[in-house]
Length: 339
Image (cartoon, rainbow, N blue to C red; front, side):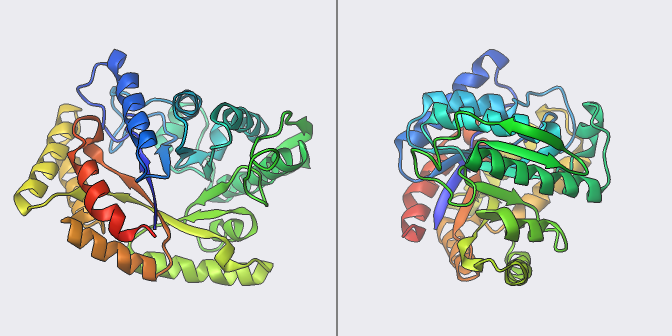
């Protein structure tokens, strides 16, 4: 099992109470901690502009600005977004941004990409909210543009949603040129989403990594759907690494675990989230596979590994305030699963 971890950036209300002028130091300090260790192969941020579970005036730092900053201050960990929304940026422009970040990082970038879903955020920023068909159409055309620009240096596409004419990407990313990378894409491509008719078909055609719902039953089902799409397009199913994201609540005792949930609820409350939303979110978190003692989490991940999960991206809500859960995960869970 391979592991990545999210750096808190505010989207999940995980910087509440930290002064804005101190937030970069907190984010960067955690990134450098992960970089200096060896438990986590990659660090991640979300591509969102407004907080969840409701839009507030709390911080949400922009993903690709963080990519560039963290690329410059870390040395080992790979850098990803889970996941970039295709429609928030022109794909030819974004391919160029990604290539530059890949150079800044020395060839450590991962491209996480998806169709997008947060309607309030879309409308607030003036993107409208296109139909699922249009959003997925943009995703398909965009990843084609990425691949062409990164692997050949230029892209031309007269698509339904995007038109580019000899859009050039020089220098090309380090990955796929002077540094190892994806044979298909140069920069490794993670496509997130579990739509069975369209999204997973795009995964089969373009992705190096699939990122789907990580609950065991859903993960197993989506894996089989993906397998069928791979057969249809002539792709080796095992060439796609299957991944999922997990909210980790870990403690040695039940009492300590309850303290973590209490802290989560109190922080949402301080950020202005309603009691009904707090209650729903806490209950949702409690049902996650990565909740419990180290032994319970190890057992859950071993079961997921048997279903084909080989890369888990973890999120510790309390990371900006308290590293004890991360340290427990690093010392008790990772050594039992990494191999």
